[in-house]
Amino acid sequence: MKFARDISVMFGRSMRHISRSMDTIITTAIMPIAMMLLFVYVLGGAIQAGTDNYVNFLLPGILLIAIASGISYTAYRLFQDVQKGIFERFHSMPIHHSAVLWGHVLTSLVSNVISVIVIILVSLIMGFRSSAGVFSWLAVAGILILFTLTLTWIAAIAGLSAKSVEGASAFSYPLIFLPFISSAFVPTNTMPAAVRVFAENQPVTSIVNTIRSLLSCQPVGNDIWIALVWCVGIMAVAYLFAMKAYRRMI
Image (tube, rainbow, N blue to C red; front, side):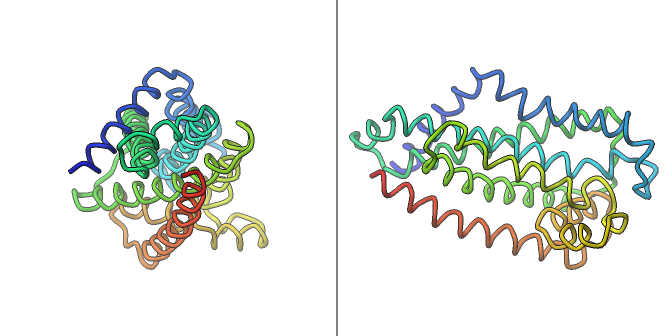
């Protein structure tokens, strides 16, 4: 199928750019690992999370922070392609126009999957343990993939619409900050009332709670449905706006 071949070529191009960019690797994997080390071995003893194994409690939030950090590079790469006229060159060739955009989306997904795997391996060395079965791990993988795609389409809007490099990547800062005001690092019932209300009703908390419950073989309750509604709803809106921004360039 020609469309699949076109996407494969565009995907290979973007992945080669990532493999040659050390700062991408540092941001998407090493920095979240450094943060995990800091919280577990420096701050963990002072944090009352209601668990004896803080790395188990912490890991879901670190994974979401890693993904939020990684997708900022999707916006940056898209912005660079726009500024350098790469899209115009590809559009003049006999390829599907949307293949260029989908190549960036798949690159974001694969690079973030690699980052997540590396972080989980490091967490195992730090003492992370899970009794979750295959289906629970598959559910965790599905949620993380859905979360990555959701943020990637938001990144696409920024990359295609920004007027500067700073504008293309600055949108990710609030996304990275959201896990800190959620159940990712401490239980929400330890927060002041106003902060707790926000933390308990923002998307990250339901996603973190779902992943944590799946990995610890606990009932997920309504959290999984809330997480799915948040992700699917935001992704659908972001996709529409991203494609609208992309069509303006064609």
